[in-house]
Length: 304
Image (cartoon, rainbow, N blue to C red; front, top):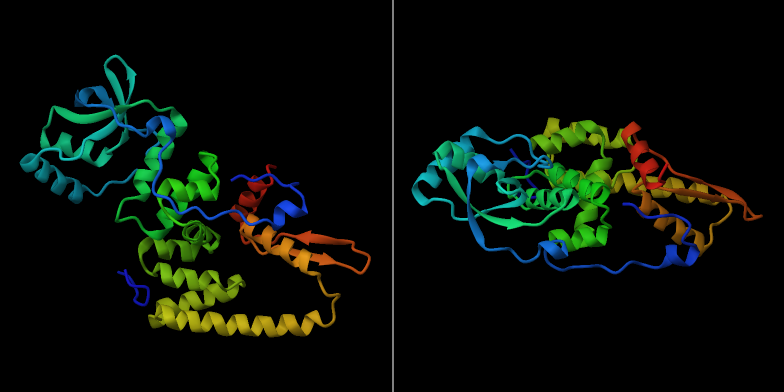
C-alpha cells in the first residue's frame, strides 16, 4: 500500500540520571523464538479430533470465503506447511500456529494433519501466536500495533527484544506503537483502511489532539494525500515552535541535561513529558494523557 494514496514494558524508574541519558543499542536481527522453541521436532500425523484450538490466538475472526478457498487448495495440494502444536496429554494437543490451516483442513474433510510438536508454556504459546499473527500479510497497521503492545505487556518483552522477535528495527516497532496514542476515531479509520500508515504517521507528529482530528476529517472529506498531510502537520509544528520560542523568553532556560531527561522520559512514557525547573532547581514533572485508556497505559508503566 503506497504511502501517498488512500488505501481501500515495563521499565522501572529510579535508574538515575546517568541511566536515563544512556541510549539503548538498536537491535536489527531476524525473527527469534524463545530458546527452547528454536528447533522443530519431527513431523507427526495427528488426528484432527485430538487437536484443540489455541486459547491465546489473537485473531478471533477468520474470513469464511478465504477459508473455503484454502480448503479447496488443500483438497488438491494437501497441507504444504505443517501446523505447530504442543502436547497436553498422551492423545491431546493444542494449536500454537496454523489455525487457518486447521479450520480449512476440517472443511476439506481431512482426518489427520501433519504437525510439529513443541514444548511451550502459556506465555510462550501467546508469544508464538502473536508473532505468527504479526507476520501475516493482510494485517492492518493497527492490528500489528496491538499485537506489538501485547507482546510488550503480556510477554514482558522490552522494545529491543521485541525487534529481535519480529525481525524489525526498534524504530519501526516504535512507529507502530505510537499509533495506539491516536484518538479512537483515527484508530478505527486505520483499522478499516480509510487512511494509510503514512497518513497516521503524519497525524502522530501533531501533538494537539484537536488539530489531529481536524486534519483527519479533512483527509476523509478531501481525500488528502500523505504528502499534503505532512505539509499541514509541518505548518502546525512551525507555528507551535514559534509560540514556544516566544514563551521561552519569559521562562528560565532549561539546561542541556534536563532537556535530555525530558526527551528520555517522553520516549519512555510514549507521551510528551514536561519538566518545569525554577532558578532554585525546584520544579515539577508533568505527564499529559489523551484518554482514559492512555492514562491506564501510563499507570501500567509506573506499576501503579
